[in-house]
Length: 258
Length: 315
Ligand SMILES: Nc1ncnc2c1ncn2[C@@H]1O[C@H](COP(=O)(O)OP(=O)(O)OP(=O)(O)O)[C@@H](O)[C@H]1O
Ligand SMILES: [Mg+2]
Image 1 (cartoon, rainbow over the protein chains, first blue to last red):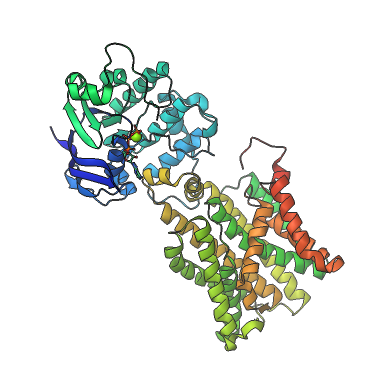
Image 2: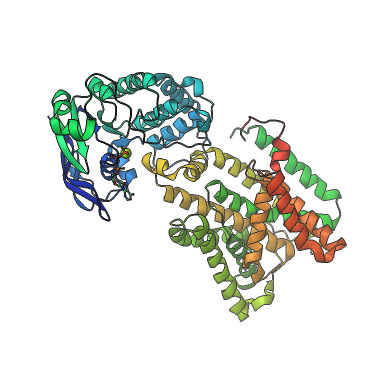
C-alpha cells in the first residue's frame, strides 16, 4: 500500500500548551480513518498543521512522499489535499449555488477571469448536479445564513470535494447536527467520497458513526496519539475507554458539544 | 460582444447625456463633467469596498491621473487627450503595482491608513516641488483630440463632457462585467471569508492586488478627465480631504449597482453647489447630516431607493 500522508515527530506548542506531541502518522491511499479524542485533544490542531494553516513547532509532513512543510494552505489544496471545517466556512452573504460556483471556478483556474461571467451555464449546471448529489438542492437560492447547520456542513464538504482532491480531511462533519440526521449526512458524504476515490480522515465524537464508516481509528489524548488501529481494537482499548470514549456499553454517547 | 439589459440602459443614458450636453448651459455641463469624473474615482473606491477594503487614499491615483495629464502637456509635448489620459492610467498602474505589493498585506483600518499615508506622501512631494507650482499647482496645456483642437472655453468644455460621458460608459460596462466575472465575485468572497478562499486554492492577496491595480487605473482616468475639464491641477488632489470625499460619495451611492457612484456624485455636486451658494458656512454641517441620514435610513446607499421595488433580485 502506498502512503499518502505521513507525519514525523510533529509537535505544536501554544505557549505552555502542548497541542501536538511527537505525532507519527502514516495514512495509506484509500483508507477511511476516524479521529477520536475529547475536547482539546489536538484533533483540529493536527488538521490545521497538515493543511498549512498552522506552522508546526517541529517535525515533518509528507504528502505523496514530498515535504509540504511551510507550504501555504492554497498550495496544499492545489497539491490535492482538501479539508472541511468544524464550523462550516462558507460565503455567508452568497447563495448556496454561488458558493459552489465560486468553488468550481477556483478548481478550474488559480487565476480568475477579469471579464467573462463567473455564473456560466456550464458552472450552474455542474453546481446543480452537486447540490442534488448532496441532497441540498432545495437550498439552491437560499443565502447561506438562512440554511440549517446540516446543509451548511454538506455544502462545506461539497466545496472541498469540487477540486477533486486525493485526500479529504473532515473536521467534525456531524457537529451541530441532530443525532437522527447524522447517519444521513455521513451516508451522503461517504457516497460522494467513494465515487471520487478519495482517502478520508474525519474527526468524530460519536463512536457509532465512527464504527460505521472507518477502517482505522486514531485516538488523540492531550496532543498525543494513544491508540491507532482497527476500530474494534481501539475502541476496546482500556486507555481509550478511560480517557476518550468513557465507558459506553450500548447507549449512544452524547455528542461532545463543540 | 452581447450587451445585457443593464449595459443597454447605460448606453441609452449615456447617449441622452451627450445629447443633453448640446442644449444645457455651460455651468451645468461643467458641474456634470466634474461630478462624472469624480464618480470614476469613486468607482475605484467602490471596487475595493466590494473586496472589504476601504481606501482613504484614492486621491493618490486621482492626483497621479491629473498630474500626468498636466505634466505630459507642459513638459513632454503630449497634447492628445486620449494619449494623456492613457498615460495617466499607465503611470497609476505602475505605481499601484508597486504599492500594492505592500498594501495587500494589510486589511481593515491598517489598509485604510496606509493608503492614506501614500497619498499624503505624494501631496508632500508636490507641495515641495517648485517646478510644479508647489501648492498652487499649474495649468494644463491646451489639448487636442485626434489632431483636432477644440476652441477654448465652451467648445473644449463640451468636448471634455462628451469624453467623460463616453469614458464613464466604457468604464461602467467594464466594471459591470468585472463584478460578475471571476475576479469580481471572488473579491467579494474574500471580503466574506478569506480563509475559505485560501482553502479553495486561491490567493486572496493576489486577487486583492489585481483589484487594487484595476481600481487605480479607473481612478486615474477620473483624475485625468478632471484635469482636462478644469484646465488646472494642484496638490489638493492628493490631500486627505479629497480622498475622504470619494469615500463619502461611495457610501452615499452604495455598492448595489455600477450606476450608483455616478448618481451619488451628481447629487453630491448639486447639494454642495447649492449649499455653498445659499448657506455658505453650513456646508460641512449639511454634509455631516446627509451622511448621518444615509447611514441611518439607507445603509446600502442611495441606490437602495431605486432597487427597493425589486427586492430579492440581487444586482
Ligand atoms: N490558536 C491557538 N492558540 C492557543 N491555543 C490553541 C490554539 N488552537 C488550539 N489551542 C489549544 O490546543 C489544544 C488542542 O486544541 P484543538 O482545537 O486542536 O482540540 P480539538 O481536539 O480539536 O478539540 P475539540 O473537540 O474541542 O474541537 C487545546 O488545549 C487548545 O486550547
Ligand atoms: Mg476541534
